[in-house]
Amino acid sequence: MEFSVQLSSDYPDKNYGGDRVYQDMIDQAILADQLGFDAVSITEHHLVNCLMMPAPLQFAVKIAAHTKNIKIMTSVVVLPLHDMRTYAGEVVVADIFTEGRLLLGVGRGAFKYEIERLGIPMEETQERFEESVEVLKALLSKEEVSWDGKYYKFDPITIMPRPIRPNGPPMMMAVMQPERIYNATKRGFHIQTTPLSGNHQFLVDQVSSFNKAKNEMGRFGKDLTLSLSRVAFLAKSGKEKEDRIKEAHAYYGRFDNVYTGPGIVENGMIKPLPRNQTIDELAESLLICTKQEMIEKLKPYADLGIDRVILNINFGTNPKKIMDSLKIFAEEVMPHFSTKPKTKISKRVNE
Image (cartoon, rainbow, N blue to C red):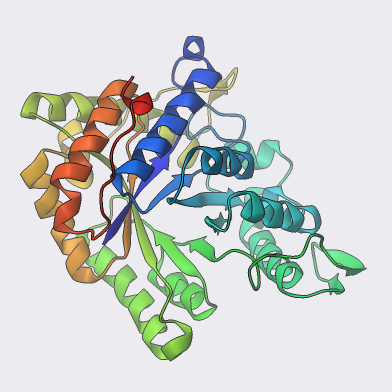
């Protein structure tokens, strides 16, 4: 089982500056590359300060320029917000500039606030997403593509330049429900999922659906992977664990506002709302814990055969503490699960 660092660009204080937020993300990517993490992942969100990244492909190219080996995943790009006729070309260019390290994660979008302010009714996003995926796949794999659908109608076109890999970069679909995981896997997608606050049986059902589809595909499904996204932080002490859980609880006060509603945003800043879930209840559903607790919580994921755990470590914590936590995680937890070797840490990321 491998690990990815989610560069989720949390921005709770405007005075900190977007330039500093993104430099923190770049520093995390450099460190993750050196420590032997499998991947970094980049969100796409607009108009809000939570998971703030309006230009994921540009950011992927920037990260590639500062790293050597690590995969760079979009986790995820919101296809209904883009025109596939131009976006397909942007994907090809990003794949070239990242030197083939791009894994294109795609989804329908989860924040009603941003989706609807960009002119798309939330109830249309699933249907738009499904058509966008098919258009994108066609444009990346064929020349002289024409389309006559509900949301796309165009005469034959060929995107240029042509992809450097057959059919473009690998594609990963963000899905939660077991039935949809099965269907997406059968269509040849890598899968990203999360149980959120669901119980362990729900996670077992998600993994079982993936494995069932993969096994039915035989050799065509053997390389498909399942990634699990979790809010996580390796704490050095019980006191640090408590502090990080409190920060995560405050973070979810903002996240829930735009994920489940009502979407109250003022000058780009999501208003924190009171939560019904207590801090103790939240702690049970997160991977914020000390070393031995972390190992014990990750073991069931490895036993289930999950290929990659995406660690969302940016939820309002001091950047230096995040870097320290990543180092300890790589040194004391990853060797129990990952076979990737660690490399020497450069002076730059320690400064």
